[in-house]
Image (cartoon, rainbow, N blue to C red; front, top):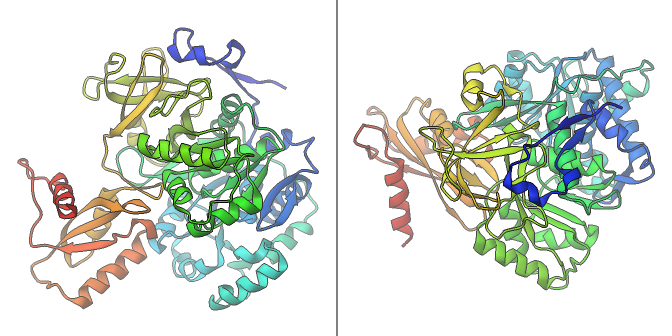
Length: 574
């Protein structure tokens, strides 16, 4: 088997933390599906997925992937087609993701709680021809169907793979409230769809090449406006090779808590593809309940716990954790947002009190780098740092204005290069060229839009974002996008969105709204605007508070002064 070697320069100061034979990362030139299959030839009897106690071995997982791939082919899906997956963390989401890769398709990952207009835009922009979605989205899909390229939608219930007794309970609590159609030309239920695959007898393996598009994920990019980020098979697979070096203690007997959603890069690459590619067990959790976190840990005893800072806040605030033993935990990994020193120490103290010999380690990355590109390895751990570049990656800190590299310890924009750097933004060459810059040596650097500095050992310290950004429960919320949606409402003249503190979510969006002169503030209009937001914005983007004003503060050059509104909020809290 031929391997691609990704090298690092010899003069990088962080290399001392890697053994000489670990400074390069080897990646076989495979599709995501082939990579999964090649790494699990000896793990077929291991448990691959644990979903509320219903266990699926690797042999069973590959069988289900094969059924799904054949079902897609039976419905006309071809190599190169885009298939959208709009699901929570359920086994069907994992199965569909790898089945798309097996037949050479491209998986477009969508948040299942996205607004109707957001789902429509994603399907139209990616030219998706098939959609896997949760059953409660049926009405949304029905209303947009004629405006998209979809010709088949597969409806899935979270209970489809639950243990029988739990599934019955879920039906009476949730599913019976959802009005669904009978299977028809446009809609099909998972069970009926799966049977199509069982009755399809042709070979379906037709994967894309390692350097071809495999996944489309969605983020605000570095400019704050929604972007569709295209990753190749190689982009995704190389992160697994890097993680094996950075997390050497993990093996095929481990289990990882799969709370972070698959439509999020951290969730898809590091929390699904990684554990399954080392033969470990993935504990799928479709909806996180902070109050039941202790029960999750008691029942499943995961050895790897990845999460965002709000998850660890929930961990240490849970009142039922006193007798939870975490001595089996090898790694607790924080990403998605910076974990400040105070909270880091609090989490470490909590872990040690519960017999975990390790503290929380941080990573840094973005969807444009296929997730984590910098990580706190065991021997490079420095409190407050997000780590060192993973093997094969490079990093430099530059002056945001001059683009010249700054001195050690000086704050500047973080630039990253390496094999996990995205192919580009879908249908947006201008923005791709702005974010991906090729230097004189032909090396492509990602301008992250984040400020940080490097210490004398090569450890990265995150400082703040150049762009406006609200981090709410680990999700990126871009004020400029919310404002753009608000300003399209016929009653709104102008708006400004800022992030305000929240006891659990860290921050939530708050909107300041100026109405047009022929509209007056009323309960009816406020309700209409809220309903409009619910239709056009994802749930986590909807402002938690609306303030109606006659005008918004302006800067000296006439722009809305959001800094002033942020200060006003701070003063209100005093």
